[in-house]
Length: 374
Image (tube, rainbow, N blue to C red; front, side, top):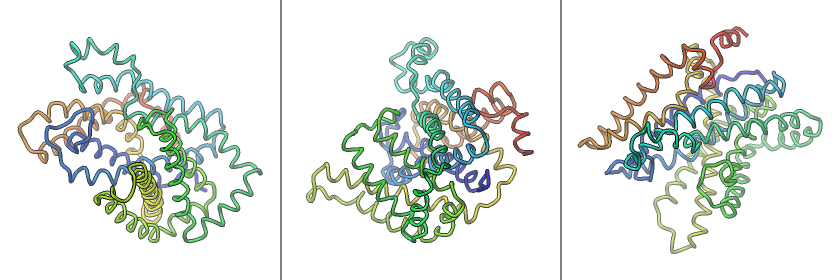
């Protein structure tokens, strides 16, 4: 396997941007978010409930693949230290400096001012949307022994069986059934909706995608199946998407208990998530085969963009939702203004300054030039 895959570069940037779009829509979809508009859009909610099934799961597949590729060219100690610098440090910086404004603007009437409340809010060490980075750090630590096992003789038999499975037309799709069963069991035993790493119904669910990313990229013929089967996986995803929305809109409460209905929902969402991940990565592998220079830079900047974007959205949305305009105007202004502010901070404050780059998990400019040259 090559140590860098263009399809990972493309999908990483596209999916993080999709996360940004999701958070732009959150004040207007009727859910209980940090900032809420007085009016909400059911159409927006109907759209968002589908895409939230697979954005982050696919990102975890990408992260798992990236971790395996990196461990294939550097030592476990170097990998661990890299993740401390690029994941743990930005997570700590984010919880202390980036998250407190979100906590304040959620209920500003409870505080005298942001500056007065800031020390107490910073000490809460709330990760908010940075739970994704928290998961990535923990999963990256687990990736070290997993990589050692996957590359040992002990795993050879297992990978031979896996190879026979993935060469079958339904092979990769069949792991969605395993995922669905696992998620239903986890939700029954750990029903919390918390995104904390201690909530096993969340962390183990996403760990499945991360590990599968490592497994799929372990051999070139495994990974190539994604591109070879992209059309078949897309067709299956289309069918599952129709079933998903039929179940979402129709009332089945007279046919099954509340618990059973939720179990079906979790299973169906898991099938959509896994199939969509296969489809997205397969399409990217088939059609997005080159990493242009602008995409290399975007891959750098997308990380601080992710760290910053929700706080920028929350601050701007706090004022925008108070305007006497319709949802269309408000969401358009929020999209344009938050993107501009976040992009400017990333390109003008973080990108040029080595000190800021380190705090936000980027390599120094000298190290980036060296890695490009390599």
